[in-house]
Image (cartoon, rainbow, N blue to C red; front, side):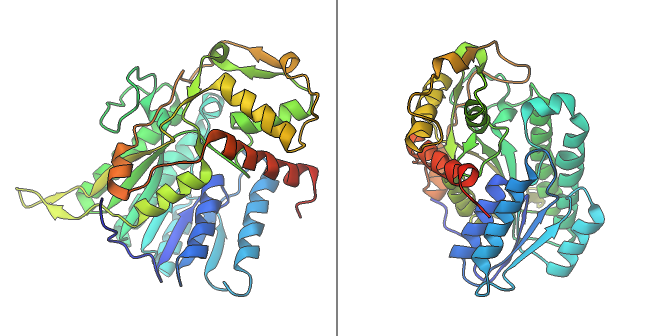
Length: 360
C-alpha cells in the first residue's frame, strides 16, 4: 500500500463541480474530517437537471459549516470554462490540492448537445490544467469515467486495457482528459490522478441516472424502459464508497522522479473506482421497487409489471460495466463495500424525505 504523501490538514482544496452529486459529498467529508482545511467550491449550477437539488446540496454544506466552520467553506458560482475566473481563484487562493469533478455528464445528452461537452469537459479541463501549471499544486485529481472503455468485450475492465474506441462523445471527452493530464504531467511535472467512476448512485444523486428517473416515473404512474431487453449489467457504486476512494487517492500523489534521460517521468496515475460486482438491470429494478415500497415512496400494492417495458439498446450505451479495482485496493487499501440493497434503501429514504416531506 502506498503511504500518504499529501497531508490535507490545513490545506486549501479546490473542488470543482461542488454543487454536484459527488462534489458536494466530497466537500462535506473534507470539512468534517480534515482539521483546519479550507474548501473552495466552484460550480456553475447549470440546469442540466433540477437546479433546486443542486441548491439544496449547497444549503446543506452551508448549514453544516455554520458558525463553527466560518471561513473554511467558500462557494464560487461560475464555470471552469471561464479562464479568467479559474485563474483568479488560483491566483488569489493558491489551492494546494485540486479535485476536478466539474463536467457535463451523460451519454445520451452528448448525442444531442455536443457543444456542452466541448465547453466543459475540454475547454474547462484545459483551463484547470493551465492553472495548475502556472500555480503549482501538490496533486490534481480529476474525474474520468467507465465510459472510456466503450464496447470493450474483456471484463472486468482494467486500467491497462486499451481505450481507443469510444462509443459516445462523452466518453471521447473523458479519454481526452486523461491524455491532456498525461501530457501536462510530463511537460510540467504536475502530479495527477484520473478516476474512472462506475455508475454512481445514492441519496441526492443525479435525476438523469436510471435509479432516480425510474423512481420519478413509477411515482407518476409512467412506464419505465429497461434497455437491452434487461440484459444490461452495471457496476453500481454507492456514492459514499466513491467519495472515500477519492479521499484516499487525494492523499497519495504520484511521486515526481526523473527518467534515465534526466527528464521528468510523468507523475501520473489512473484508477477504476467501482463496486467490482456488476448487477443485472432487472435485479437492480426489482430491489429498487422493493425499497421504494419499504420506504413508503410507493404503495405496497403497486403493479410493477404493468409499468415495465423491455426495449433495445440505446445509441452510445454499453451492455456491461465491470471494474477491476485491484490497483486502487493495492495502493490505498480501499475496496467499495456497500451492498446494492443497502445503498438503494438509503436512496429511497432520502427520496421520501426530500420529495414527500418538507426539505427546506
